[in-house]
Image (cartoon, rainbow, N blue to C red; front, side, top):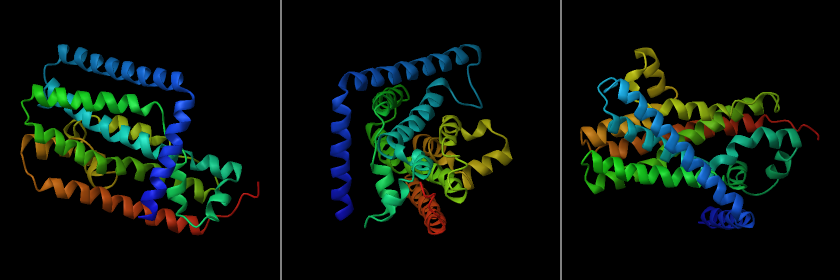
Amino acid sequence: MRYLKLFFAYLKVNLKSLAVYDLDFYFAIAGMIIQNVLNIVALRFIFNLVPRIKGYSFEQLLLTYALATLAFAIFRCFFINALNISDYLHQGKLDTILIKPVSPLFQLINERVDEDAWGDLLVALLLLVLVDIRLHNPWYITVMFIFISLFTSLIFLSLAILGNIVSLWSNGLADLAETTFDFFEMSKYPLSIYAEGFRLVLTFVLPLGWVASIPQEKIAQEHEWIWLGIIPAVCILFFLLIYQLWRLFLQRYQSTGS
């Protein structure tokens, strides 16, 4: 309950900070909408040349894109500051966070939100609804996908933390957190387009397949409702594993003295 109150307190402050620069906020949202529209147009162009890719129609691939974008937009809306931990190390700000009686990771995550991401979130939700209509999926499938995306966003958070563990290990000299954006690009496509060995990596090591490809296949296509429990469980377990690694390396952290 304490952390829930703190979360809403942080969120209120962050949203107020966005309101100070309201014009920039609206321009950022518009920019992200335009970017997503251009991405969809590019996919449409590809499908004008190739009607199906690995058995996926344009609408099915668009559903994968929408699910990945929705999960990543949730990550960016609420967890984007996880990408900036190396900056805290360089500036010596991590030390001030460690002395507070609140989880350091919780503080780091909630100190900033991403104004651009709200445009992504809006486009992803709208696209998800439209594609489900085109695929004749019932309304509750859309609700299930939104529910699952709340958990699959934890995969991107976990990968960002994993990249920051390298920063802790090297005292900020190396930073792999930004590779989360590259992982997002990989998650937008079905697992079937990748080589078999790489599919295993994307399923069991870096579980990007759980973001969009597996939910689409198991829920939208095969209607196996047990995956409504399996997918969130996998996301939570992966996050807890990475979080324990984070705590282990945080204990070995040495101040930069800056």
